[in-house]
Length: 183
Image (cartoon, rainbow, N blue to C red; front, side):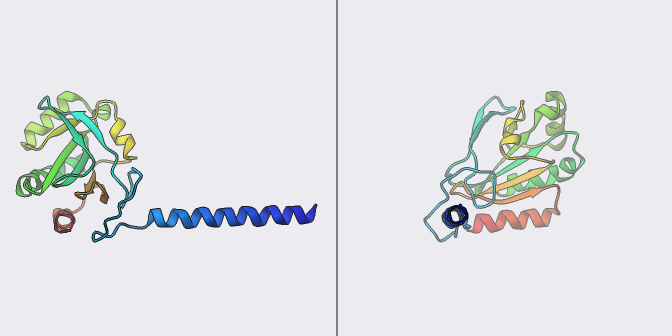
């Protein structure tokens, strides 16, 4: 009986090691010079960004995710969020300054906001980038959102390269954008 227990422990240990070694290859950060891409979608650094489609205030439906010609930035926000108000002018500037190399999608988590307040926010800060409406909060949940603002930078291959929760100095956010554009 004791021998069988030890044998079971050894087998479980070997299976655990095999699974972990298999997982480490998949979980390694993707080198920008490498042609290998992660194969699973997860809202985590160095993983493929989950794709989604949302209708925007302009009435168009936008598709986010996958390979693109430009770097993508997703900004989850709400109109009542003071840090969101603080960063709005900087996001407007980044959207205009880097429009040839960056697609910025501002996703209003309308499930925590109101359509009227979101429209007033967009008008107040004169935002010109697509303003997507996450009416049920599904995309915010998909990206495991916990606070506003949340900014996610995605490279041209569709891989998440940076996740910033909360407001950071504009210079810091711009450096992050520039680094991903330069890759």
